[in-house]
Length: 311
Image (cartoon, rainbow, N blue to C red; front, side, top):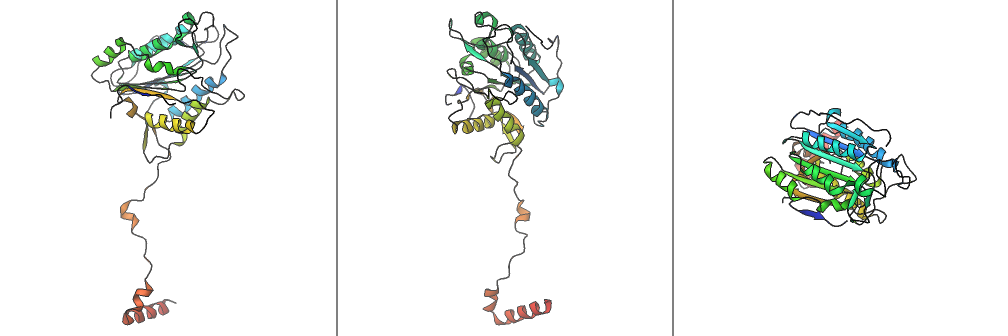
C-alpha cells in the first residue's frame, strides 16, 4: 500500500565552504550529511562529539553502498556550520536535485524546543539559548526546504532531541510543489525521537556514534536477517524500531511517509540467507535400503556379492 500520510507514533569557528554551484548527473542519489557537535557562542549548550563521528562513519559506509551508487561528488558534508551556512547548503542541494534524483538529508546534533513559541529548533554552531528563535534552524523550515525540491524521492533522517515534531511540518506550499512534479514518488522521514523525547547518546564515549545512528550504521555494515537481497529505507527503520523496543533505555524512533518513498531501496543486504538451487537439492546419493532388499532374496544375494567384491 502507498505510504500516504503514514505516521508512526510508537515509538563562529572553523566552517566548511559554501558551495556556489553543484553539478550532478541525472538518475543519481544525492546526499547531504549535516552534523553540529560544537557550539561556539553558548557554553551552556553541551558539545556532542558523537555527532561528528556519526557523519564520518555514515560517509564511509554510504560510499561503499553499491545500491545508492554515490561518489564523493554526490555526498555533501556540513560540519559545525552556522544557521545561514547550513540553510544555504541545504537549499542549494535541494535545488540541484532533479526529477530523477533520490535526495537524502541527514542531521545529527541537538534539538531544542522554544519556551516562547514551543516550536522545535535544530541547533547550529552559532545558536544560543537566548536567541534560539533567530539563531536556530526552525524544523518546519528545514523540512519545507527539502520538500520544495524537485527530487523524485526525498528521504530525511534526523538524529536529535524532539525531532519528531518534523513529522507534521509539511506546509501547503511544499505539497503543491510535490503535486506539480509528475515524477515525484514520495517522501519519507525518520527521527530518532518523538516530539516529546530526547535522543540518547553515549556521553562517556565521544568517539562512538549516537545510539540511533550507530544502529543505522550497523545495518549498513551487517544487514538484516529478513531474507531480502536489498533493504528498503522502511526495512531499516523497522529493524531499528524493533531493536530499540526491546531496550527500555532507548527512545522510540518515529517515521512518517507520503506515497511510496518508504519502498526506496537503501542498501544491499549483507546477510541474505543463501538458498540451495532446486537442481542441486536432490543430487546427494541416497542410502541403500537394505531392509527393503531383504524382502526380495534374489536382489539381496546380488547385493551381498557386490559388497563382498568391493571389499
